Amino acid sequence: MQGDPVTKDTQRNIDLEANVTKEEARNMKHHLYSCSLDDAPEYNDHERQSMSILCARAARMPTRANINPGVERVGTVRTAFSSHEMAKVPHKRPNGFLSSKRIYHLSFDIVVEFGKQSGTLEFKSLVGGAISGTTTVTFE
Image (cartoon, rainbow, N blue to C red; front, top):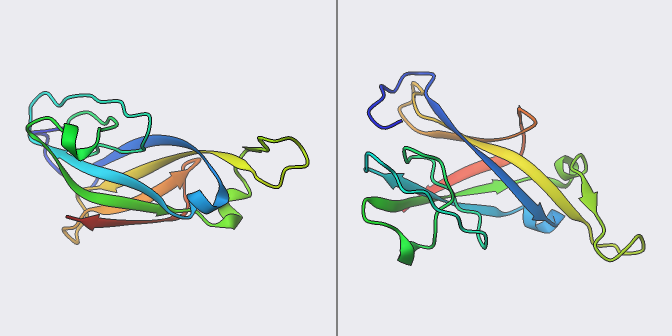
């Protein structure tokens, strides 16, 4: 948390869940926020999957227009899961057995490792504790 020393083992985990199609799972987008406040605000945003992993508390954040002072969006994290990876995820057919459309309930973590020797933040996605999918970050 804020003020704690950053060591080679420092990391933050964000637990995320999403009901998605296979196509949506190939390009999931999450906003990355930073917060310099000692007491970071908590938010819930049910329309978008956004995250705050650099704040003192990990929470979902609102759109840019509604961000509190002291909180700023610093980037976008994209996670992509392959069809092979999605085959292992529980799914439903919303329109019955004959429907070809499947909705997958994806539960995953995004991990940010702060203290790597390279001096950069490293991002990865985990499903069931194992690395899965590809995760990239674009800083603003």
